[in-house]
Image (cartoon, rainbow, N blue to C red; front, side):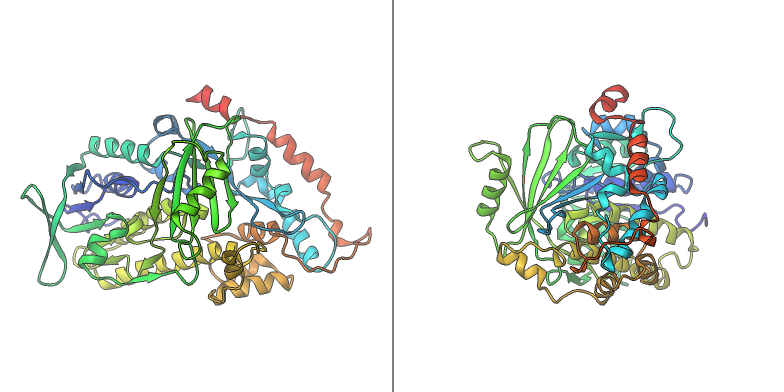
Length: 508
């Protein structure tokens, strides 16, 4: 690491919430020996959007990097463990109306190869078991409402994410950041000053003070006060790929037993999330305003939750789907909603936040004093971030484009949408041609966004196979795997894991 690139710099973060305070904490830890100064400015009048209350397994590494144990933050944020996401009603094909997208674990090496192998033969028309739920331990744990952490010695780490209260997580990280020396100013920004070369010079706040800095981080949400409004970086909309632009959220009482999975249920004009916390269930409906009004969406969600006559207030939210052309421009880095947002279907919001901060820190560390903010580093960084947005967008689009749901104009429009990338077309074509999906995903260089098993889960989970089936002869290579053995193996492994609620009660 170059010790001079960031030394003695003043970093000013505009906006708090989870994105702002993740940025502050990670920078404070990674650059603690560089004599940097971090100031975070946020308006007390602006709340957290709070749509995303789930994460991918990557969030675990964030807390490890900043030195925070699960026993510290999870109880403070009413958090639960997340084995993965169950998708209900996205496919109308018989036997495939529901499937589970697990998080990868080393233990899967003993069972998942059967799915990969069987999927090839199933795509060749052999009548053989290929529903993904049968091949992953995480699916079994979620089905049994178990924690992903073994009760006693278990030689394989299990991949998992979290559910949490987004507002409480922001507060927790705020307290942690200020304890580590981050200066916290609650104020409204009235104007943004610029240098002659176009760089941001300062923030002028409502107290009359001016906050100058060397690097500015825009965590101002969809407004993009610095990156979009001040620096005029264009926004690339994903509207033609992803129709949803609104959400309505309603909490409900805590569920029993306490689940360890997110549930995504297909609705008339979008989908509903169901996220279990220790004190409540977070519910919401993500939909397209082109097909459904806010009142219709709220009524449909309340009906699903049996809360039509409830006085529980609903929150209505607008979403700006897409990304900025440049995430790092001049001396400004955009993080969180200011840089872009792909709807919360796969809980990727904090994934982007973490990838952005870590990538920026790495770029600065590989710089020197004279070119720490040079165009070369910015171009490489921006290219990587845009590729990540495009790759994850394709996986999200696949949920809609490949769905066999056809009960409303919304779903018919999604299944007929011609605006899909050549990359997604290649993946689907390779699947239908019974090609090796691992090879296709690696050749496309998108395996770091969603690995081959994720693509198998959605394609096999939707039941997308040739209609012509033939029974495999007894000596067929398709019988290489004894699925009874796979079932027994996963079942025996699951005995090492405690009930989710009892595990949290015991450890937290």
